Length: 75
Image (cartoon, rainbow, N blue to C red; front, side):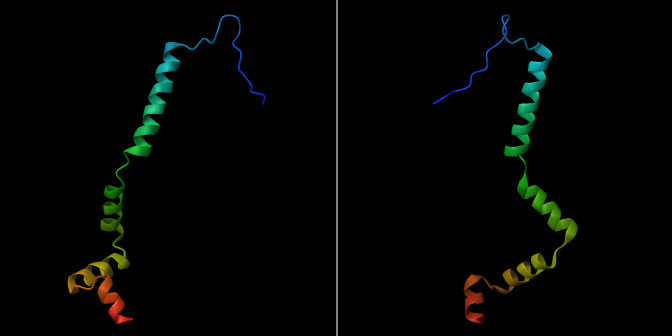
């Protein structure tokens, strides 16, 4: 099995402090967006703005007491 290795130049890898900070901030930003995105809040905003008919039907079914059991009885 051949493993490729990255060999630094004689002086080693030189990364400035500014680049390290930018890289760290970028990684932190991606992490926050991916793992802390408030999906339920976005879904609620969509429901309030778009007012989709399927959601209104869902609410009416809940109001009538028609859960999954009632749907099976109607079939």
